[in-house]
Length: 111
Length: 115
Image (cartoon, rainbow over all chains, first blue to last red; front, side, top):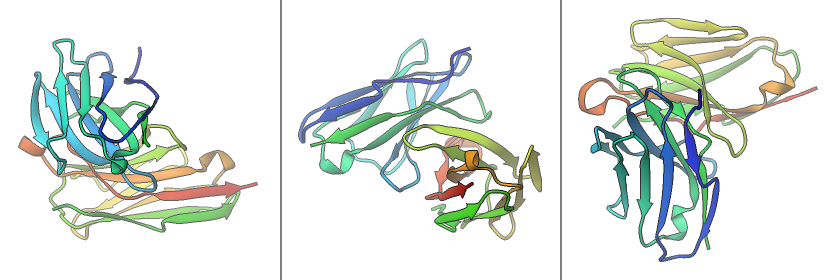
């Protein structure tokens, strides 16, 4: 039973570019949450998707957007990349109020 | 706004010691609290989850306690081993409804256990 899978594992972009990160939830899960973890910090909640809608959102600018597909997979899009967007981006999936399962993340580096 | 604090930020101990990691949170209206382990450059592995109605949870050498009224949780690691070296993160879920599933994390405690 595959857990949460994220792609790509590493990504290097330059300032001003746009990036798309992908997440496939654990089998049976219908909710996907995204977190940003800067070096030496705890993960910060970006947003959560359920039934293809953004259900709640953290304190992140509109440059951060997402999508959930009918198969429950999800994408995180970041426009106009800044140096401060360099971080590990974590995807977590869940079902109802059960605990979230995390993927290994995508390491995004902005030059 | 919920804030989570973890003390100490880093800990280095010899193998075999019993350890205590601390977590505090500002809003006691939580749904549950989780302890995670994170290896360098990796994702999060859930170690223990305590529901707001519970006082503690145990798994092997790990024991986590929760005092919701005082906004504190403790992770106790018995007989530490070099393989326990990792960053340990505490996270709280603020409740049901519109905030269901959102986790607030501390910055973590970086643990090093040397042989």
